[in-house]
Length: 145
Image (cartoon, rainbow, N blue to C red; front, side, top):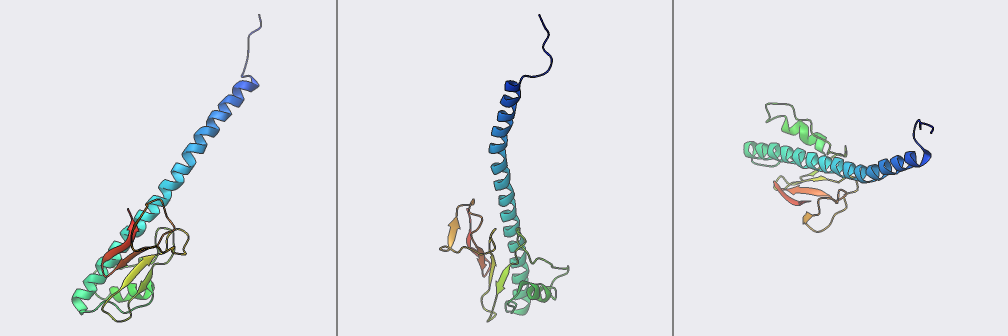
């Protein structure tokens, strides 16, 4: 009898099929986890900005008047003991800040696609990463569950 050396073609194909199945399962899970972490980073950055906005409001008796988050950062520096440079969400899209009267403000992340699919205010499924996340006057009015 002859000794066998190496693998047969069938054995190699079976191993490749198993690797393909594992990759088909693991890659979507990994991509969803990455999107979820970007969403969580966006929410945390929004909370940080909202804290600084309310600190400004306590000291100045009005919310900062700005129509851009970069202008907002400059205004918030006047009452902060450290540099504030939060302008982007987890997907590197610029936050949208608006405050025209000083009485109310809105801060939004436009989601993964940068278009900000807006639904009704409230919570939405956390796997919908293209939805807009919004804080109005310190409260999340649209956010993931």
